Image (cartoon, rainbow, N blue to C red; front, side, top):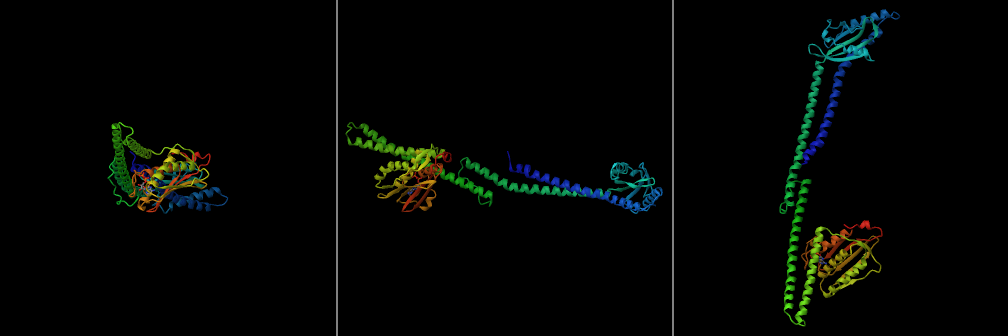
Length: 480
Ligand code: ADP
């Protein structure tokens, strides 16, 4: 399984290790150049002083004499060499044989020869080598060919011990490696510490979220312990659990109220069927009354089944079958559909049909459901004698259907929740609380919006806005 720690180790830590290794490599190569290059250039400086002196030596015109006097000068320089404790100064002939040394003894140990041959082959006339003497001492030898003829002297050679420089080099190596390792250790420790501070609460969040997902909706995360992204994640998960609990409660309530409500009409239908069955005279007043009751109860059952269908649509997502519709015609149809009920409740429908069509891209059955649900609420919550206003308006881009009633209104604290599924306000008379949730889901799927404004005791206004259909824009209103 992937983990944040592994990802961190593989990603950022690996990059840090590579960067540190590169920095260490560059640092060490710089130090090496500085230390060993410094020794070499110290020797070359001495050679160039001597070469400068040689240039001034000699007699004009007599080249042999000049060469001899240069040879003499070099030998003198070797004898009088005052840094014998640091360097061994030698003169070599053309075969690379030592002619004289500053210590006076020809130390076989210091003869390696590589530097001399390198000097012979290099264009600068300088050759350098580092080797280990038979005593095990590391030394650096630098040979420079004498640029003038100087008798039998062909080259100058300086040899110096590297014991001190080596010691300094290894101290630098170990110190810098120590610093790099300490930095890496610190990085590893602080990184792991930081990651653990994320991973540990996250594992806890994961375990509790699992429990919630498994149906334990009472479990909550300690959201006050962390005041950061994790704390916010905990709060969000808690809110989600709260929401799930509430939905679960409302769903159970819905199922129980629907089952309960199904029983009453069924009992009534059953009773009347039995009564009618026992009647022998079709002219009996109970015969007609019974049929009326059965008809009425069947309507109630039908409405309840519609609600159940709405419920299942909400759960499974609203499916639309859209086409170009005239919103005015649809509104007029809906007005006619509810007219009977409006009159029955002692209300009055105020509707002025706009003269021109309002084209929209919508599903006729679902649009009818939107109208019926909103008008049904207006009728349900209006006192007898009141009016329900159905108004249509349009701009270039949108059409708005407004249903206004003069009913009891929605308490402000309920207003923001009325579009939630299963929500029933404290003013609710009957219903399962999914009417406006279905309206909102359909209108949203059609690319529109639902706005509800209400004043307690004065009435409620539900405004539904849909985009105007322009030919060739079907793709903009693609059904969801
Ligand atoms: P139902 O399907 O039970 O009618 P709705 O989702 O349509 O539920 O409405 C949710 C709640 O909003 C209702 O229980 C009621 O409290 C409130 N409500 C909706 N429309 C109106 C209205 N026109 N007047 C007053 N209250 C309303």
